[in-house]
Amino acid sequence: MKMKKYFSEALGTYALIFFGTGAVVVNQVTDGVVSHLGVAISFGLVVMIMIYALGAISGAHINPAVSIGFALTDRFDKKDLLPYIFAQLLGALLASVTLRLLFPLAPSLGETIPSGSELQSFVFELILTYFLMLVILLVSQNKSTTIYTPIAVGGTVLLEALFAGPICGASMNPARSFAPAIVSGNWTSLWLYLVAPILGAILATWTWKFLKEE
Image (cartoon, rainbow, N blue to C red; front, side):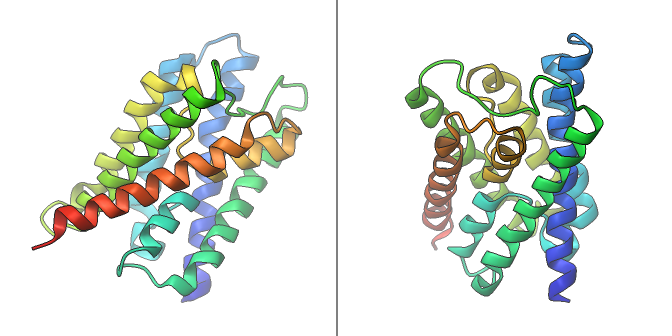
């Protein structure tokens, strides 16, 4: 059963990176046919679909920051944290390798790079992940709204990617930034896309604990 969960996380993260950053790559090689709106919709849709498809198996975290956030609650077995993160990173790396094989001449693989200062993007990523994690917890951990979790989470990703993508890339996910950076060899500002989402998820978890207290 454990292996099914880990495979589910690897598969879901593979889909996220393949379809999400794949939309970025296709947009580049087709001179903008997909468009920024199309990229944001692609990320939102794939997150929604993966939660519907895999949520009952592993919870469909498909994001190390989300797994870390859940590990600070009583809703997730802390022993699963490292295997989840490993599976997510592996799935993401395999997706980026696939895209490199499909588009060997693409100028990038959808790396997240700040358009302004690193501090600006750091704050953006922290806030974006904070609200994403807060939505995940508030909706998925409430019996009356659980059924809407895929729509709420996918919609949040779409919203945040739509308006913040041009500024910081709207990663909100260390695996989403890690894999394209490693495979492309472009590590520019990678640290902030690893640290800021994790901090944002932790802050959101603390907020959720405060809000749910009797």
